[in-house]
Length: 322
Image (cartoon, rainbow, N blue to C red; front, side, top):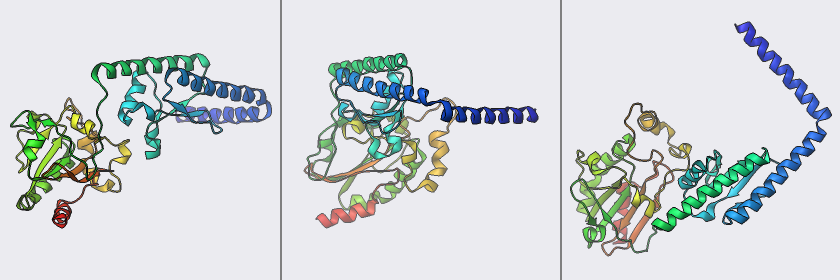
């Protein structure tokens, strides 16, 4: 058997060498046709988008058949843009996999027959039309990036014990630490909330209340005994409204703390069976401090799972402001 495998490998190498030789000695006509095809396809995509999805902009080709398209003007998050491509049955390279600068971009392979490219663009047009129709019917989601000095928008929320609470009423006259974490079954989240519970008495003594937003249902949290209020947001409406988005890729989650994340990796990504996480495994946390008059005193959007200020540091910051 191994002899046959080795013969196959050697024969493939031999064929590859011959194909390479022919490409350099007799492939000029083929190369010229390839260049024309790629260039024509790039022009086709550019013209199609200008006519059907004018918000999308093509980047100039740079000696390759991979075409970058900037979709950032559509106003979609990275996950929403990825879903749009899936709805169009397009399996492209998501820009964020190449870094933060790639957010809002998709990379197309346009070295393919025109008929296949036309079919792909038609599917994209159909998917975007459906997305626009949904927005028209349901409204464009409000997305707010919180920053220090702005007034905290009001919202209603549910906890395991109560429904329809209003944030402005529940926090009026007192400083509130508002944390966005992941979900109740996340091991890293459980550890972080345990540490927060240990810091809660010191924060309470300083007049600081704590509210933690989780992507969990009230039923999933009802057994937890924390000395602070848990806001249940299984539909992720608050995450979306206040721009607390997931990481662009799984590789961005640990930041420089990969060794700290390894113990929880199986819990987060490798779980088997019917039970699935009740939230987005790529979700990143965020931290906000709201003054008693509703003013945002501090805002921090995390770059990775471990990028959160220590409650002790926040307490020092609040004391310095007073």
